[in-house]
Each structure stands twice: as structure tokens, then as C-alpha cells.
Image (cartoon, rainbow, N blue to C red; front, side, top):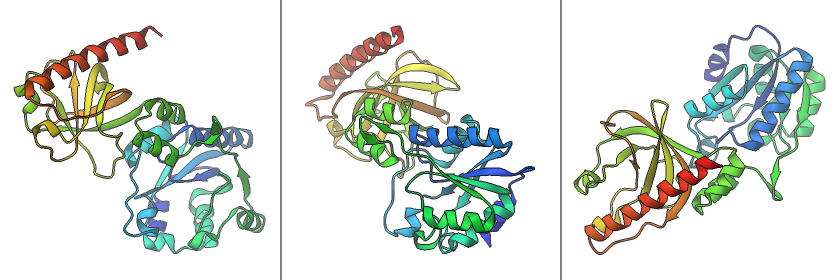
Length: 310
């Protein structure tokens, strides 16, 4: 059984409190849950474990749907570790895993993760057809000797913080709301690959990022951003869209680093989104486009300079 093999790779040396979830985005709601997990574990002298999944469970549970992710598995695992979780267990979400009953899955948690307690959110369900709701989990906990602690959701302005709410804010270009819900600026990362070379020909070279089609992107437009190359931050202006001035094409994310000189091809680029400047539009000529880009760069510098003062 693949899931048992993946569980067996964990190397816990003491009993643990466990939380389970997709944790897409590792947003403020997730952080509150993880904080409670750590607090309870410290009091009980237990380790902390976060169990998560790849790919997103909906790809298996609802074939044909392709939920866009906010953080890929590597980024998500890194963010979970930054929250101080002792062990991150990434399970391949397969039909085999989806068909496990709640008792079967909990037995694996007890066996391989030395689970003494489960810390979850109020809408959590586990096992085949979601049979393991909170009431069922508490009954199984009494029988199998583990506790179940339910952590209330985090609300901002009356809205529950969730990955879905963040995706909706992204689609509406509301980067301030994204930042409020996530607790940090939205981030894209990818390897810089060769594009059309149009930016260089216009005298404004851009770094074309190689992105997974399943990555959630802000809506098309021009954004004030920060770009990170090997940990060093550069002010940047980033365009997401299809270059309609030149006939359109594949949707891309292209960053112009304002004060960078050098070759970025093949290097990893991380881009944080600060604010939307404008919608993407079709210009009447390359010269008109260049004048607008110059204005975008001027505004981008001013916004980032002002932000640096606060």
C-alpha cells in the first residue's frame, strides 16, 4: 500500500499531535491552527506533525476539475517548517488513499506517527466519502485513545480566511486583501526561460517565468512587485497576460527588474506582488507601449519608495 510506505518514511522518535489538511497558501487560518497545535504539543510534551497531500484531493475526488494552487508542494512544506512544525508528511493523494475509511486512516496515523491527538478545523472530514466528521472522530478517539481538538476559524472583516477567498481576491486583483488573508504578499516563483525577446528589443528586458499551468495567478495586468534573485531583492514591475499589442498568445508572467544587470536565464526568480498598476491593454504601436511602460516604471518606483518609508 503506497500510503503506508509514505507514512513509514517518517522518523518520529516520540508521540505526537497531528493536524491534517491541504494547507494551500499556508494562510492566517492555517497559521492559527498550527499555533494551537504547537501550544498544545508543548504543554503535553509531544511532537508536532502536519500531514498534507499532493496533488490537491479534488483532482481525484472530482475528476475533470483542476483546482489552481496557491503554493506548490515544495513552497508549502517550506512555509509549514517556518511555522515550527517538527515533521511534515506529504502523502500522494490517490484513489487508494481516497477509498480508505476513517478508522483505517486513523490506524495508520497511530501506527506510523505515534498520534496521541488530532488538531483540526470545524469543517474537517476524513476518510471515504467524508465519513469521519468531528462527531465520528471524537467517538473513534475515545475508542482508539487519541484526543480531538477543534480550532475555530479565523475571520477578517466577518469573512472566514480560506484558500478559496484568497483565490477570489487574486482573480479580482485585490492584492491588499490577498495580503491580509495570507499574512504576506502573494508570491510566484519559477525558473527564468527564454521568451519572445520583445522586451529586450524595446530596451526593457524582462524575465519570463516558467510557471505551472495549475498555479493560481493574479488577473491579467501590470503590477508593482519585488523580485528576488538568490535572496537579494530588486524593485520590479511585472506583467501578467498575453501581450495583446503584439497579437496575443500564451499567458505569461514577465518581470522587469528595475536595477538589475546580468543574465537571469535558468535562474530561479521569486516575485512578490505589491499592488496592481493597471489592466493589460492593446496599444496602437510599440512606441505607445514603451511610453506607457516608462510611466509604469516611474509609478512603480514611487510606490515602492513610499512603502519603504512606512
